[in-house]
Length: 297
Image (cartoon, rainbow, N blue to C red):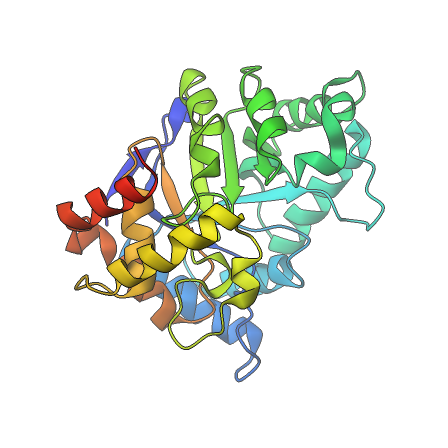
């Protein structure tokens, strides 16, 4: 496993990290057992960072139960939002949400506390007195978290928030992979200007890079131009020695602005497949040139 500096936090985290949305698995085995197997495999592979959220079903509870029987130094991040469903993103709600998350997971402190879907909070609520940012700062002072971050798909708002210099990390999903580069236009430059740690999630784009899965729904996340590019790019990626999931992760990690590529693995095999990309190296030079040409870079 390779490790990268997580922006100004100065933490070294694994280039491939773990997302918590599918820790429970597909229901074929006990969710806690499934999560335990994934966590043990993650540690063996050198993965040291996991990102979860109250929105991800029982992820926090299952993670907490699994951690009881595993000696782990995994750094854990979670988010505020969707808990309860009408979460108001005010400072006191932020604190209450983080306290609930810590209790569910049985941990004393998070490495990062993040705003889940910044668009739902909005600029005013985040930045106003008594708002989300104030709540996250209070959480830091009270020792609930070490750092604070932002997440979402609202690229213009993420960029604006990143540019304030108030946040240590940013997580963007669905908007940065070989067939979609939206996050690279403004958000990543803003993150770099403020020395933020960058997490790229949902790299497999809802099945776009998973052979055998109908990817019509995945294409809904792409613009018309991106859909045309996607067909060409996917065909070229199939010529690589790596699998399609591996190729998607290789592409993302080729960008030095990215700290970690998050794997939403539902089982050990899925995690092992993408975690291996740090050992097998980047996509071929010809493939990278093909993708860049498709995007007319």
